[in-house]
Image (cartoon, rainbow, N blue to C red):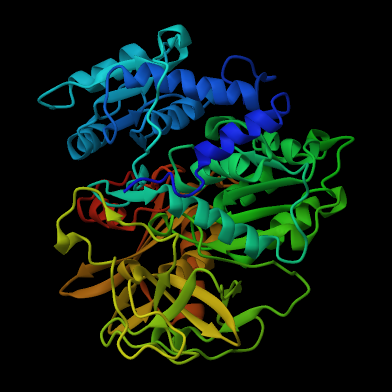
Length: 577
């Protein structure tokens, strides 16, 4: 089966190069070599030629259907590697470039899983990447290709016209010990883009001069789709930089939003807090955010308090609450499933914590319970709340697993046996009228539909069961963060034969009077009281650690399983030791 029967990201790229050859396609600003930023720009015709040139060089070393691992710094060379590998008929495998001196284990695992024929990199890091390739434990070492040194004169005149259905493998960001590759097709990608546009631009079409602004890593599902694919599929200009550039100075992102026409962007929950805290009024002097078209908040559970802080911080620069677009998705569905529009003036959705723990939904008064973000229940993809045991649809106001059906759902996991493909190909028992029978994707996420709106409460695997009661770690973490402001991990850990609550808390604050012990004692008392009041729980242990101590994925999500293991092994450097 080939993808030529449908339009692909490649056909859209070359079509735009023909119709709008001199229009700017992508600009990447490099802050690593100069803090003021060095800008590199490609027009549509230049990007098209660059992809074709890279494809020609790759095709000399590989065959259609082979895998091409990308290990390169964030930049336009990474974009060319992704597009060029697909143009050559290979399956792209975008990966993060490991830090010098870091373990090779994750890269080696993916190498063994995919058996790549080529590894695409740049001359700047080729020596380090060559070391990873040498250590990959493969029988036949893949060819190392420096894509910034490709010569179009050496490219063969004919490239494959029948591309494999599989476009790329999206590897998990590391929340599990073994990275798993999601098999994504050209149709998955175009279908998900169409779904995203229908949800977010249902009321008014996207402006033709809209700019996609992104610092998200290209190897992450949202960074890849938003930063590379959406600009090409939608014909929008892309204004790009790196995650390090954002982390060094979050105001760079906010300034890019203000300086770009009708900016559309995305960020995980933590980035909104960081940008609000670390962007000064002077950083935005003379600028306004009133033309921002929207910012997707996703990649981890969206917290209403975070959205409110961001909106309040930038309101006097023209930023409005309806520019915040919370979304829910996962790599197994390409990236996007459901979205919504934030409104600070709408009543918040407060739900009783005890009832949620029992799998039921009951609203409660403002100021009590937990606050959840609303999403529109999408028409495409189709979404249902399902009882995981009976595989029957749940009635409204009952918590169940979120199941998804649509052309954006992936084919499965790469190179995994059937027993490890259980999330794919699920079938409903006695589906309601108009509901597809199969195949369904079991997301592993818990949620419910209340008043025709979707609410997401957390991951099944992260659910805490303490003394026989269910608790969602995100709820407990938000309670603690309101006091400490830093990252928090809520865990259920066996203590004396029973599951007890342990919270690992990163403290950014310092003892105001220098008396650390007394200050930590005060924080501990405040946190303990807040958890008890909000959740009816007694924390068996509060572990205070320095910022950056809690293990996270490459996309910033807390790795709770790894965190629990570190706690059991007593590996945290406790500030309260």
